[in-house]
Image (cartoon, rainbow, N blue to C red; front, side, top):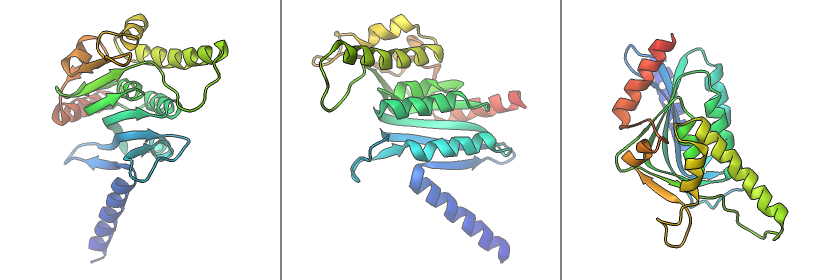
Length: 228
């Protein structure tokens, strides 16, 4: 009876965890425990978005990643991504955190990985994208009032350079090629940038391979075995 209560409590805690921040621990039969992180909707940063907006709150994700890194039980991380982007500073902070994890990590783009979602997708040790998944690379945008000076432009350039450097350092695409995709005027009629669908994201070197949840999990367990 006591065991059943403990199991029920554990299930309840996991359900609350999923509801609150889209994270849980996967434990396959005879396999290592892995942490599942969902990055969905808009990446919420220093300002709260409306209650009707689906968000990933970076202040929830950072402590969880630190907890995973410190855990002896959890051996790897699987990141599911379907995001339109969001706060640049906080999205890049999440990407840097993922990239610094010492345990094997795998990402899977299951829908969209737009804007600051691109660094998040490439921050892991290995990356997958489903055939219909998309990645949108575009210049940095800011909302609100801006001062029209050279210093403002330089600041935008600095932020953009941070993103370009991170992505090129964690994928197979070069800095210059990524910059060309970012500033392309050939695809979006009223904007700058490039949309890459499935195989094209692999072809240019942003993502490692095409695949869904099964190959992503298989790859992660293989990497965990090699790491042990």
